[in-house]
Length: 227
Image (tube, rainbow, N blue to C red; front, side, top):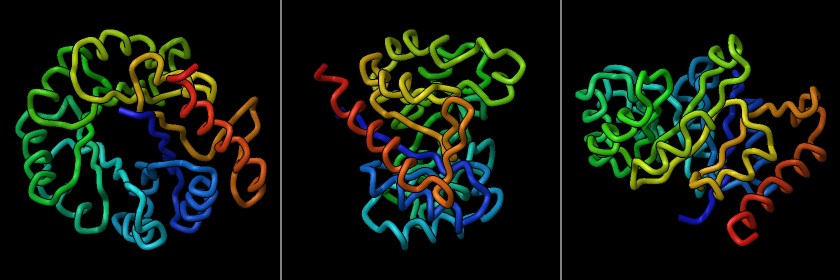
């Protein structure tokens, strides 16, 4: 697939999320993610607001579903999400329930292998149970305890093991994210607010600079497969 750039809105209010999403869309970002902090802070109302503001953009609801798969996916689909996230360490029945809801409502499922004891086996099982994408995800807390951990630990092996698109998530720099399509992970995600060289970029204070950073990332990602 062609490279895709996704902004993860890891913010806690709809107001901040809409501000960040507006800058990202102006910069050429393809997909918008309602990050887990946003869903915890604002619930499905955040998805409704994003869908209203950006009617033509895919919207990912990062639910990190572990149970109640059908209902959670159904709720987000009705709110306007086009993609939902289920955890690979959930019971296989939950994965299948999310996939069933996605098929019923015409949306897609992203399977997150974070915390799996065997990342490759987890990715394969997610694919077999019908998810559409695999997330190779190194968690925030894991990286906090061991900064050496990153999606690179498992990315190559997972890419080789599955036949569906892969996304790498967790602690990647802008430059590393831009290189992901070359490594077999065409779904490039960058979290917001962005922190680059210890400087935090938020739309309320750095709108023009933030837009430039994201615009450069989009250009790098789109050109990466041809360079």
